[in-house]
Image (cartoon, rainbow, N blue to C red; front, side, top):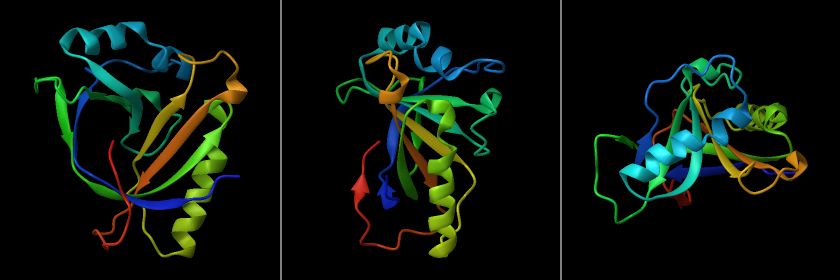
Length: 161
């Protein structure tokens, strides 16, 4: 079982996907997307991991999805990068097929209710172990990140993207 953690993410400059029609596509087609990886690495080296960003927080609506990946620290900024401002968030891990991560989202929502932490409504999913590392979906690991509306209360552990 995974515990929900309350953390602060530092601002980060990340590669962002170009506009793309994701409707009708699967997690595998998005995450194991060789064209997207080649596009990012042609511009400069990236160091991963891959973040899926759902602006409306509905992980079943891929058509609104944006992909983020962290560039190598020595890469020069370019037009393919976007700065994601720092924010507080609740996080939880899901092990198993990515399509079944709703339980982790529910844990986060319950924690937010119990601790009076209003969620913004958007979410990130960080692919930790996926098709690039195993074909066994039971070994997949996904971190769910739900930003909160709170200002930085101080004292939270700070994480990098």
